[in-house]
Image 1 (cartoon, one colour):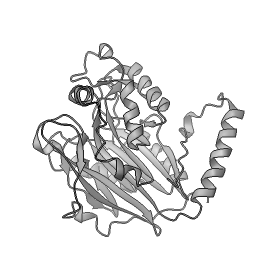
Image 2 (cartoon, helix red, strand yellow):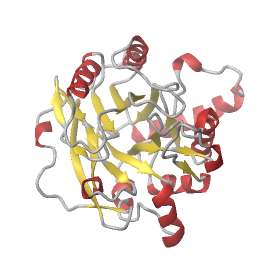
Image 3 (cartoon, rainbow, N blue to C red):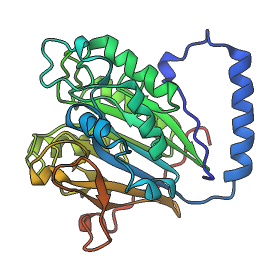
Image 4 (cartoon, helix red, strand yellow):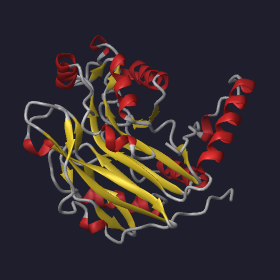
Amino acid sequence: MAARVRWSVDLMNYRVAQAVLFTLTLFATATTNAQSSTSTKDQVRLLFTGDILLSRGVQRELQHRRRSPWIACQRLFHDVDWVGGNFEGAIGPAAQCVASAGPCFAARESDVELLKSAGFRALTTENNHAGDLGSTGRKQTRQAFQHAGLLAVDFENSPQFIELAKFEIALVAITTIPAADGRVQEVPSEVVLEKLRLARLRANIVVVSIHWGNELVPWPSSTQRKQAAWLVEHGADLVLGHHPHVLQRPECIAGSPVFFSLGNHVFDQANPRTKEGLIADCRLNQGRLHCQGIRTQTGPGTSVPRVLSPGRDPTPDLAGCAPKIKERSDN
């Protein structure tokens, strides 16, 4: 894949105590390679999936079938420049579940490699199940993802910056649904506004992943609409929603694509509506961000999604919704 991704730490939390010489050597090598392979590429393609579970019924199916849940998606994922999704739960033993976590989504570290093999580059880990194993589980999740070569993006380390070809993309992760350990963000709020400001300073495109809304409700609430408008007004070029576990129709709000809910991607819920998912398929091309949806379907008795053949456009409201790719402040 031509594009090379360089992960950047939060501007406010950069640790100068790292092994500087080793880091700079790696950085110089990666930068040289990236410039030689991507300098002529004028378009990049990114995919964002819905909720991903690696515990409970999904874990049992993995143990029984011994195959990746992304067996039907792998070709698509490896044909694009970058793939992200929303990870529900925390890495660690169920014995660490906090008392207030019900249900508690404790996942095995050994299964994280499946995400990497499937083609994922980053997962947002800011949602109502991210704190199921408390602060220890949050740390274990970050470490397990890092060990697998993946980026775990939560609110504290947002924004994260992803460099693809000539573009810099900022990713901010937010949850308005309280986690078991009590962590939650308010939208609007000054702390979220500061994250957006930091993202806007450096990035061409700002992407916000947000956990919000009401479970199993197939339309956005008035609160979601107000929050989406506020996020776009303050710098978000693309909003990706999770938590309802069912699809909510995307819309164009103030010129920016808002996927209110992408639904489930890999999950064990049995309700037929929770078996339908949407992958946000976004391209940076000709100075604009263009997004559409790719439908997925999960059959009864399984958590393995399949990509549906192109048919009726599931995102007609996004036609013509193409925010301009902004110049970075350091350009």
